[in-house]
Amino acid sequence: MKHTEFSFIASDKVLTYAQTWQPENNLPLKGAVCLIHGLGEHGGRYEHVARFFADNGYATLAVDLRGHGRSEGKRGHIKNWQILHDIISQGLAQCGQRFGVNSPFLYGHSMGGNLVINYVLQQLPNIKGCIVTAPWLEIVQPVPAIKIILSKFVNKILGAHTEKNDIDTNNLSRDAQIVAAYNNDKLVHDKISVRLFVEASKSAVYNLSNAPKLKTPMLLMHGTADKITSYTASERFAKNAPPHLLTFKPWPNYYHEIHNEPNEDKWAVLQTMLGWMEEI
Image (spheres, helix red, strand yellow):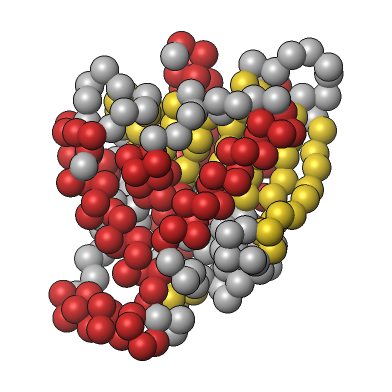
């Protein structure tokens, strides 16, 4: 597998890190995947996913979102949601420039899943389809109403203020090694700013309200035992989206990171992704 790293200047003039993985051989690619990670993590945590895709003829490009991983910016903070839309657009453009694939797949997990859904609903991009796993449409442990109300006021004057995101990392995966690696990863952080929380929450509400407007083929998958983002919210989105475009796949007893579950469980998830990609 061939691995490359590069950076680009995003629309907010901030340096954004990205990396690619692609098959070693010179055979024509079947396609490409632009990967958008979740809150607090980074694209490097998906190397095994990219290797699986490469072994099956697909290139992968992963960007580190603003304030995450190796990209610049205050940890866990964004100026606005549109900047993240712009980063996705640049990532998709890079797939064309680097792989010669002008209609790649777009894949987002957790907060990245929220972002990908919002992007395809609003931007109508030229992509072959999107894969969304465990999207942040609702949070399992609801934020108190008073805190939500206060955050909207604080956002106007102290939007960059950050707090811990309160994610219990034991709920990421049933694989203890995955949890330990996450906890020891120096590129992972546990921060979220008031602005990012407000913007992501607004996006989630928009997504649930506009599911019927979906115009892009989507594979939506969620573990039923997810204690971080709501499985039932994904179920509602799937129920309201056009059935000829939306494929919904529950994973019984899986935790939040379905691509990081133990042993053969994660490979079943990746094989399902591949099968869907090759059918549409």
